[in-house]
Length: 422
Ligand code: GLN
Image (cartoon, rainbow, N blue to C red; front, side, top):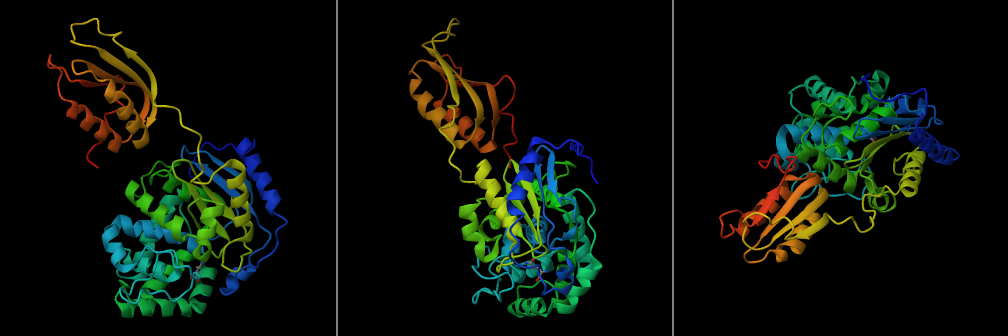
């Protein structure tokens, strides 16, 4: 297992908070362990675990966070990410759509015009996604999938051969979905190759801790926060997270988005992976499922966590601190610069909204003869699009009569030196 900052001998305050949420959910014993894959029915239904991995690489855990179970459908977003990384969004979406289906995970889902399954988070779409992964044979595709999912987890994941055999023996509905996609022209391999790779992918074993790190890798823009390996690009991480947001909980996705508000994916093995972009990933494990195939206690735990700690991705944050810390007029104009010089000290992270505030409030202070200095000394981060907007605005202001730029971007720490190509 990869090294990290976790000291498991002294529970962190966060682990204690996680444990208390688990205890609230523990009495919920409704639902049933999946049995349509017979081997899954052998799982101990009382297991309950959670882990939270921050994008800075700290992991907090409570309960059965190290218990192994099969990843099942939680593999779907990660294999989708691998397919996107390999072939790009345009090619992948020729084969599978991006629309929530509002239907159960095993629905016969093929768009009547395009022949595409509605989305990659339901079985039909996931089998098509697995068929897109590089390799002609099932074992070639699976080795790409297994290496990719292991990179997301930061450790080498193994197959539960008993669950795999059980899926193979009982997977005719999935084969039927594959044959339908094949006949519609959207499956990129034979049905046999696609379903074998898919069954093996579903039979990879993980822990709640693994799921937390896998989700945190998406939250971290595609870089595993523990190993620091870039697994997929930022664009791919964002696209994958978007599809988890709209489709990750099957026909409960809309309600989930309102109540919990975290991009997530569930599986019939009892796992759920959820994430808050730029902050953390969470993995939960509890095998009893509701009628939609989502873990009863996993859903309860994530609902409670989101509510207690204000984790909803659309949570309204109070009026943010102004990015303009201080404005001084004329004070710095001891040199020969004509007219007044306005110096504005900026601060914090400059996103689009903050740059809008800076430009809207400060540009009118620019006298026809004067200069405006934007000082980035206390700015912590500016994204490339915001830098482009600032450079464009500064350029559009043109030079002062003395030839100096009318808008100077003073950047002592080089926060504006970002890669503008991408
Ligand atoms: N392997 C399972 C199946 O194909 C995965 C389904 C799930 O986790 N929802 O039926």
